[in-house]
Length: 397
Image (cartoon, rainbow, N blue to C red; front, top):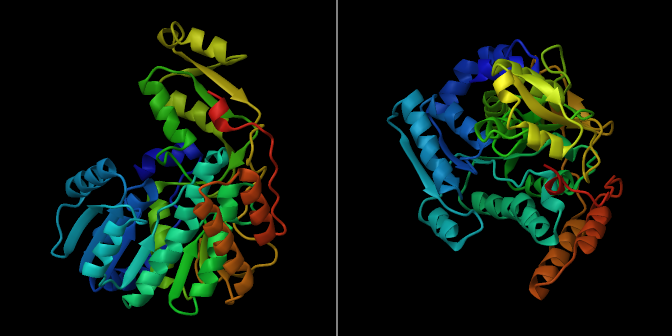
């Protein structure tokens, strides 16, 4: 799968091969003697992390996810690829925010490492105030809750995935992850925590590239922005990066992939052209959605696929991607293709308390609007560059 995706994102080699070779003995020794809990383990990144742990034969590997179907597929995938281990491997279809999950932790809770991969990751999740509030719950408060439980149960290390969009955020998703990082700094005085920021995971569930697969299966036009460039990692690379940060990251470290010839920007439209070529089609550029839908009836039989490549004008799209800001301290020497952001436990306790209290008050009233939440985010992040265009991805094909 890794080798199949690399050419589509204009890459020839995997990012972390050299780094993994240098630490593999210690990494495997650590995994084989440790107990792991993976939260959000049935999403694309969660599955990749789970497989990286499983194949190194942990003492214990429990996986939690709200998606029962994705957990079933994860088990089938692991059994088909790796078989079985002597350690305790189990999956549980639970909502991290639920009482059932709390009971699960109370009944067991014996883990060395907790990895939290659960997140609402879509920019489009800010389109309405209700989904936006759930994004805050999942990205911030469920993280707080599971860290507190980890502290109480004597967990050695807590890992939580962040995003490149947390560096100078322009959308509510990236800002929620930046606020999450602020809460992590406070908790890092009670438990060792590391995290990771990385690029888009190519063909991850729900992503635009994953949508290319769906469009071909359903015989529908392919739509992509032609002016948005992004960095991409493969699912396997995302799992490797998270596990490396979890095991080797020092308290408050944020790992990220370093830029090189192996990692560079590419547009979604460029990937679409490569993707169609692999499937035996040439793109036919349409002028609008109506033409693209109409031409689906005739073009594929002629070896062409209707495409609509447009400029982006929706809320929350960042013009460029970055993994760190000019105010963050970096360690670029420890690994070949991994950089590390070094953090002191710097946080404003009053500000974090204000955020918690304000969100709690909104929930108690069972009424809030997006404007109030955006204003709260600006109070938390004075440099927040959010711009509302009034247009969202759900309004496009």
